[in-house]
Image 1 (cartoon, rainbow over the protein chains, first blue to last red):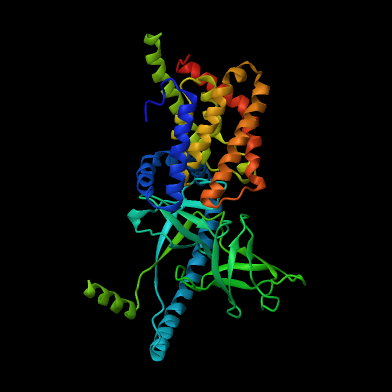
Image 2 (tube, rainbow over the protein chains, first blue to last red; image 1 turned 60 degrees about the vertical axis):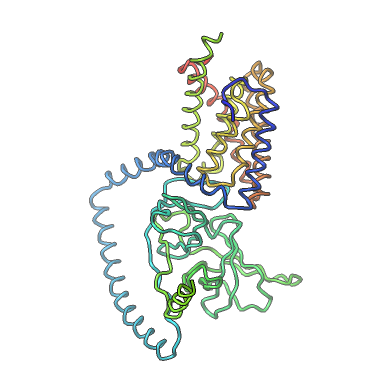
Length: 288
Length: 166
């Protein structure tokens, strides 16, 4: 491309830009060839993201330094109580887990997969108001991979869709293009939830008139599709509408995770392989 | 004239660089909820401004480069924003003679129309490329853009005077 600041000759420029753009759109929507250049540019442009978070950082600094001591004391006491409660619960969980493993061994079932957890902080940016996505400050450097599950302390947030060297993009479960396999905790009924674009509304499509689903039911991740570990809470059913002439009932649900309020998220990665998988991998590597 | 065009070209580059950087920061800054959807399209404002005051030098190429930067920053599909901003720059370029004699209020309306067309085009294209759907909220930012235009115009004129672009 010639010097863009020289005298322009309108139509020529416009037509060449048109050709290049159409080529880029086609290539980028069908292949991954442009991901390399994008990654390099994203590192070059990362100062802009850092600069954009300055106002929010200053605001947080002031609120944290100007908080009165009694308030801090109260917050501290609350956290302490919470800590001891969780500690005692986790002790109980340890014994339960051991018991569960023994039982599984007796049944000769495979071990439940363990997940490794990475803590990540949301970067203070509104990535894009047209899509429900957030960016976190962990990337290829920290071993993040596409399809990785993301949760917060309450429930499922979404999954990683793009990984760049220093950051990655998470698509939220409320994104209009996102669907997620779940099951009803009460009876194991399997279905999917769809994002709608509103941060507090999910849709549960394709349930028959005679499906057993009630307002207040908790939907947990079902682990179908292999991307997401099962058993994490996703949403609570808020409305079930049966319309006589329609094949399916209209069910809406509300996400459990604090999608628009959490500052920290947890990235789950599959860590421990089962014996079978290890053996399979060995066999594959021996073949090569 | 050639003796003057050389430093002027550098100061133009500086002016565009500063304003685009500020616009990018303003675009990604964190906002309270009530302002979120009305937050103007700063990049579109900046591109339209420079295409208006320097139509001979800021055209589709520059719009395309800025749009590509935006796509990297927002992790969008390549090509959509670049083409959209190039189109905006091209329209403003070819009507700059008429736009410059209008009063700032009339200018505001025409910019609303142009940037509205830009949003329609990019929304439609990203619908084809990335499965995006245009919602009612998508258009709210146009209101913010139109309202902010006169103020942004005055500020950018100040910037232009500061870096001495004729």
